Amino acid sequence: MLKAGHNNISGALPDDLFRATSLEHLSFPNNGLQGTIDGELLIKLSDLVFLDLGGNRFSGKLSVSIGQLKRLEELRLDHNYISGELPSTLANCINLAAIVLKSNKFTGDLAKYHTTNAFPKMLNLGNNKFSGAIPKEIGQLKALLSLNLSFNNLHGEIPQSASNLKNLMVLDLSSNHLTGAIPLSLVNLHFLSEFNISYNDLEGPVPIIGQFSTFPSSSFAGNPKLCSPMLLHHCDSAEAAPVSAISTKQYVDKVVFAIAIGVFFGVGVLYDQIIVSRFFG
Image (cartoon, rainbow, N blue to C red; front, side, top):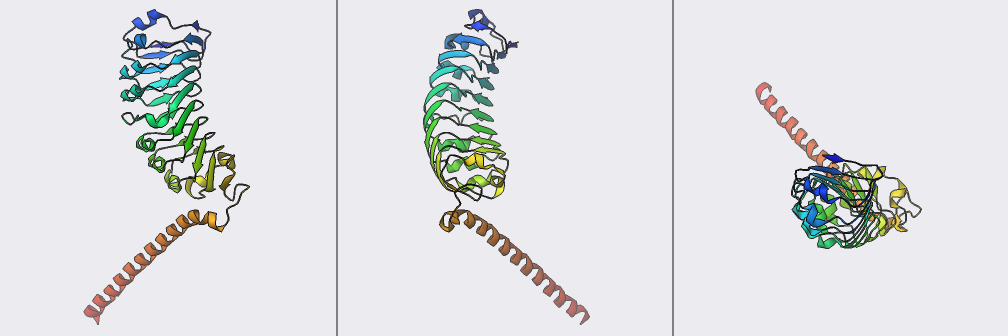
């Protein structure tokens, strides 16, 4: 283990560092380190489980050799100046539980990346320059607890598949160019405690049931086409219909269930009376 965070270390990573081939934990966050992260040197640390170089001044691209770190569980390179597209080989790191790359200069279409071989619990790609739509495959990352794609150039709709992330606690899609309606299926994310879709171009009613009844209006700010009792733009009857439809369905389901239970017990009581009358009548 090598930890030297929150110091004033500057310059490039020394070549001698990569001779420690049995190193499992490398943590140099919040220093003044700079230069590129040499891929040919990085793969010498094949036993790495934890890599944290966040809060420095690293630049250049993330090498495709990152995919050879098969034991890697946490990758933290946030708050640097790393650019270019994410290497597709990152999907080879099948043990990754946390990917934190926020506040860099990464670019590219997110739809190109397929990380479904790994099952991260935290995926933070916020404050970069990613483009394209949010891939529907995101719904396959069912171990996710926190997803942050904020402050990028993403467009298109929020995929319905996001409702498959049943363990999700944090979802931040703010400050993009997302359009369309908020998927009503997101109300099924019962562990969701932080939700932010502010400053997009979403439209239609905001769900008002489930966890959505607990989110502040700031979670939806900057979407003038959204409507809700908590927002300046209230829904008219036509706009509110999709939300009330869910509530109505739930109500009908409860009524049908109650009637079925009533009929069941009613028939049971009648049957008992018939049996009793046979024996004692």
